[in-house]
Image (tube, rainbow over all chains, first blue to last red; front, side, top):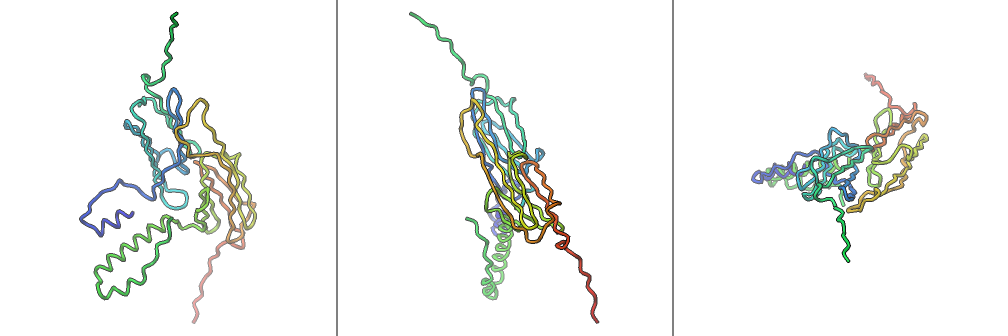
Length: 122
Length: 156
C-alpha cells in the first residue's frame, strides 16, 4: 500500500512490486531433518487450501498464502527456504490441517546416508 | 513499535502559501492513515496480546475470533456469561521422533484470555466453531440489548 502512495508522488520511480494485498506475515516455522528428508511445519491460521501455494524452484521452497485474514484485514503469509539441490522434487508432500502446514521433502537418493560395510583385516 | 499516524491538522495553515504541494502531501497523509487503520483493524479489541484475537460487534451478536493453529477442540475451554467470555487452551507440540532440529519457532503453549463484552449477551445461545486453526465464537446479544430500529416522527 505504501508503494501506491509513493508511486503517485514520485512518478519517476516506477517500480512494480509483486501483487499482494494486506500486511505481510512471516509465519513461525519448525524445520526438522532425518536421514530420509526434511519436515517443515508452519502456522497458517485461517488459511484455506485453495489460497495456499507451495512451490519448489530448486534450491528454494516458496510458501505463500493470501487470505482475507482473521480480524485485521487481508494477510499475505509468505516464507522462503533454501533447501539446496539435494531434494527430490517429485516427492514433496504438503498437508494443511487445523491451520498448520506440514511439508515433507525427501532427499535425493544420492544424498541419503549410505551404510558402508567395513571389512576387518587382520 | 507501530503507533497511530498523527493527523497533521497543522499543515492546513500552510495551504494558502503553496496549495499545490500541500495537496500532494495531504493525499499522502491520507493514504498513510488508511494504511495504519488497515493494520489495526476496526474491531473492538485490537490484538496486542497473544494468541491473536478480535472481537467484533455484528449488530445482533458479538463475534470473537482467536487464532489457535494446531490446537485441537478437546484442548480448548470456553466459558461465557452475560458480560464476559473466557477462552483457555493449550497446544501440544513435540519434535518428531528420529529427527534433528534445524529451526524451532513454534512451541507448545498454554493460554488464557478474557474479554469484557460491552453489552449483555445470552450465554445460553453462544456457539463456537473451530476451523483452519481459528476459533470463531458467536455471542448473541441479550434480547434487551439487541439493536432496535427507532422510527422518526416528523414534528410540525
